[in-house]
Length: 113
Image 1: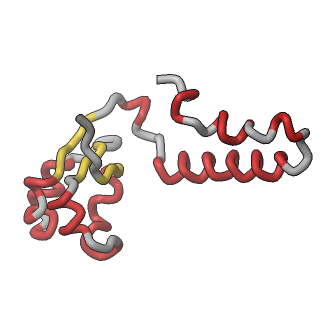
Image 2: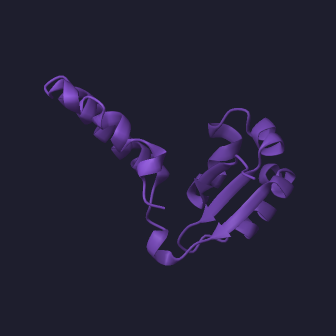
Image 3: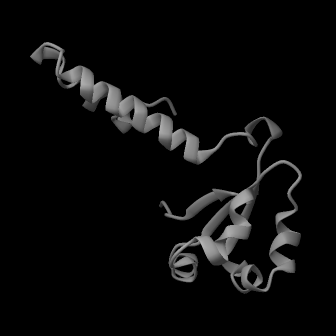
């Protein structure tokens, strides 16, 4: 089966206590996956912070290859929305036969796995 969890980079760990809402509820109900970035020692960051330490049983640390450390999920979402908006604007100028283009491009079935 699948599990829905909150995913973010280790650069966001310090913000959980003050910059996020409903963290404890999300952590307990769904869990958190933290992608270690650069040379961040996530385990130490969590152990040294009382708030994060209280959530540690719900936080899974994922260590990824260095070539992925620069990828920002915020930037990916931003670029996706820009592309989606552009397709919607273009759709007004496209022939009716191509109006399904947006659905096709953003369909999960058409993404490479």
